[in-house]
Length: 383
Image (cartoon, rainbow, N blue to C red; front, side, top):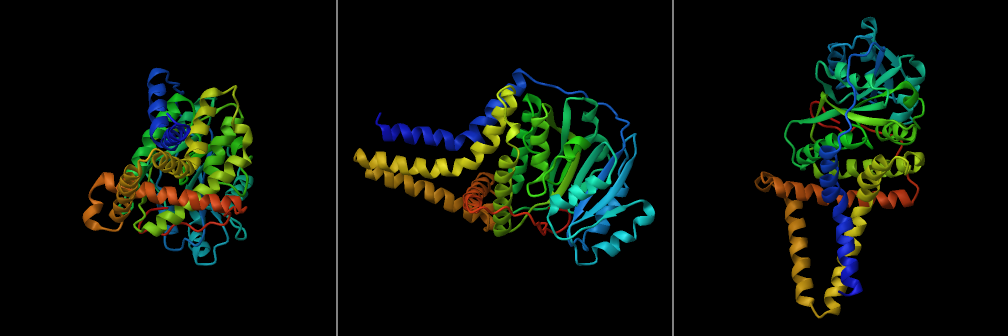
């Protein structure tokens, strides 16, 4: 085998590793060597922090949902953390002050900055974070705090569900991510939490940085402290799926960029004294962000090897086949007829995601951080 063919094979493996091979390995590890954690009711006081920016259309429904939740044994307080809203959000929240809802406001400086200000004003040992666009089931908070009965657990992720119809393939992606989240928890630790619903101990929240995502940051801080982050499947939340491809591309691009900056912000999360969580972090985050580049360079190596061996017809056939499949998958995102086919929808979502990650790399290299935040506008409950 020539060097070009070997390079193409290695790069193809690397491109598929994070999304295909790693999930199989971590699911197998979770089955062979599970690491359970203790769960029980905890008597710690809990604060529920809802982060908002211009949520006048959704905040009342969100607060009605929050105030109807089953409180944990130690009690539950609700606080709205405002990121410089200039609409009617503040006046709507004011109507709930008599029902115990707190308010922490500040200038427009980003979601994490608003969360950090709320953390500074709170005294509770356990903090739960959720978005105004996320609907929590009645026992969601009571369930999400139960893993804190285990002293080795420092952060807990909620369990995401989609409501409504999707045209982007996001529904299949969420099911995939939840299966991976379950396996990673059982095998070692999560390396990122649900962005719209998660909880952490106070000492973890106090270390959050204002210019990188708090959900991923909390998991990395937990690892840095020698503890773990786990998923609580009974702490269920729901949001509405994005319906437009452009909307999903922008969200994925923003999420990837913020994830790259988060990895740079918390380098101490990786330690070979914790081999399994470190392997999970490299596989799930670093390799996933690099996989589109592996695919591009691998395709180039394949074309070079084929041409060098006189296999131009093979190169042309494979190129046309791959391009056609990707095009058909992308078309499935905008075609109601093709959208019914799950594999095509998944392929289209993968193409959009890969393109978004490549775009995020250009942002990362240029030094962008994307600190300020505008919630994705979806009908009903949603991010």
